[in-house]
Every structure is written in structure tokens, then in C-alpha cells.
Length: 112
Image 1 (tube, rainbow, N blue to C red):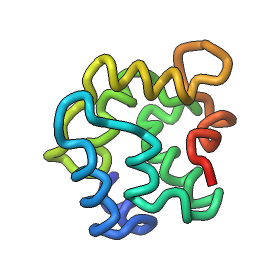
Image 2 (cartoon, helix red, strand yellow):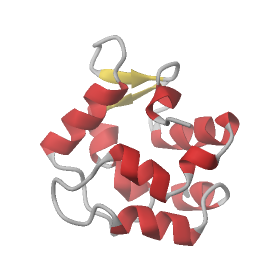
Image 3 (spheres, rainbow, N blue to C red):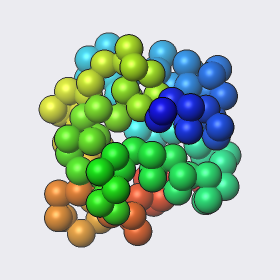
Image 4 (cartoon, rainbow, N blue to C red):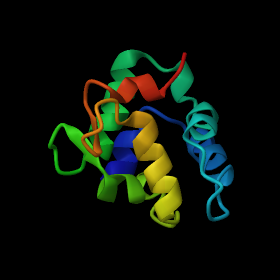
């Protein structure tokens, strides 16, 4: 399962802290979330692995629909992102304006 794959990279405590930071609608901030789950301190390979898990249809891109359900990858009981959150997340990661986050641009979302 997705959760199992993620838990090989992130601890339960890290995931819980990330989800805790964005429980209210429109409170999701990807920078805060990535810091809370400890992605900033992971290797590029580990980050790529996490994004690979998020790319559920294995297209090499993370599309808007996949972003909307982003938090559910970390916990089945997590909420879906709102449209505003999804669009802001997408805009931050979509370097070439094609409406999705490409495999090449995705690690730029995580500032070290």
C-alpha cells in the first residue's frame, strides 16, 4: 500500500506532524508540510521516491486530481485539498505551465 511505501521513508510522527499542520480547510501550505514531514532533510533519492508514490498513474507527472488527494497518501483519513489549495500547490510546482508537476520540476518544490 501507499502508506507502507511512505512509512519506509517518513516516520509516523513526521507524517502526523505534517497532517496536523493543515487540518483546517485552506490551511495547507506545501512548504510547511514538507518541513513538518521532514522531506527537507531527506536525500534527493528519497524525495524522488515520495513523489513517485504520489504519481499514482505512473505518468511521470503529478496532475491536479492527484494533488487534490495528496494528503490521503499520508493517511487514509486525511482530507482532500480544497480547489484553492490544489491550484496554489500546482502553480508552485508547475514550472512550464502545462497544468501538472513534471518529474523534473518536482524536487524544486522542496527547498533545502
